[in-house]
Length: 131
Image 1 (tube, rainbow, N blue to C red):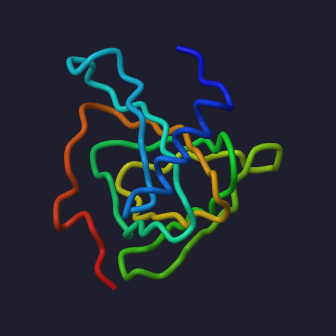
Image 2 (image 1 turned 180 degrees about the horizontal axis):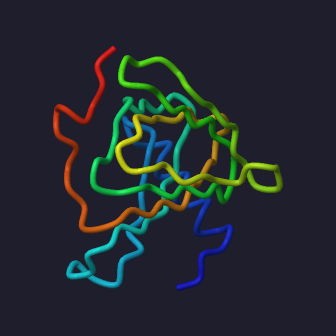
């Protein structure tokens, strides 16, 4: 598979049509592949709740566009924030396992590469922070 600008634009176009303003593309080899690797197209206004992954770190690399990633303490206070975009000092980051985080999409057409350990599992209520 070649991931070119045409493919990324198509993914972004699909994200614009979705209520959640997001569209992901699974990069695993098969359903038996126990990793999580995907492209995630985001549009400004997508809602990303503050959440954590207790059993995995999460690597996020911005391929196109820009985002702002936030880290929070257990009380919901922002303890770090980074703007990430290609060709800048921060093109991505690694979110440690258990770290509360979320992001804000800053530009239309933003596409990320995301990777986590192990098979996908839905977030549990205790892993989503309600502020």
